[in-house]
Image (cartoon, rainbow, N blue to C red; front, side):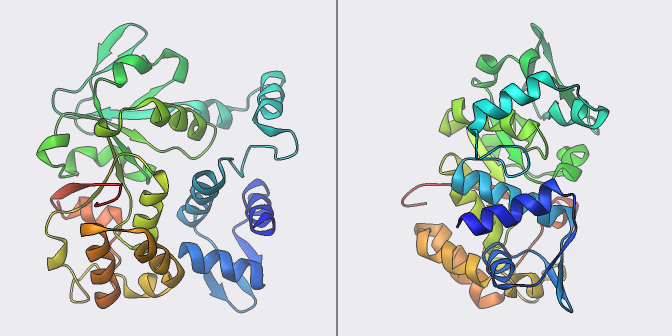
Length: 283
């Protein structure tokens, strides 16, 4: 496993979008359903790299883009404190949020909501985390979907929610801290509806995962299904089937039978009604 972590670190910290094919990378890609093999290289999209980063954070508790394995999190924090922030890092620190229904966020002591089509960018130290724990919280994996939060068809239990982008730079740590404090019954995750996405949801170990309410109606015939993406996730599918129980296991079986992979953006664009499934035994 250290070899896999080191490989992902080199990819992310070097700002690369492709690597040479080898056994280590083929294993990483098979487990996470990412990458596209072109000749002797494997090419990665920005979303592929985000998923790899989230995989290491979820599985090993460290951020492969920023954490120092040699010195630990405290060493990295000391390093950050002594560095001047670049403009990119300034925005990378901010939490990106939106509110639905009657939900509110409290920023610098004042309650705030977001009109349709807008989002907040907030410094973590200005956000009232205790107040947030009284609100329903939905974490979205794909930041590009945040401006379209009003098109996400949330179940009745999540109609009044704060929607928070999972992050892609320094803000990943702040989101992880928020999640650790959030009550499980007020936390939901929105990942791709495919083996890798739902395996990643299980990795969170807390809260609920959002899935299509009528998931059994989707299959290989669905126009926006991506069977090729599904076939690249055979290791993730095995992992999902090995850990899921109850309805989520039935979903995994259905995904396998139908080669099903539905991306978040398509679920939002087509206003697919969602529901929650608990991420625990009997889910």
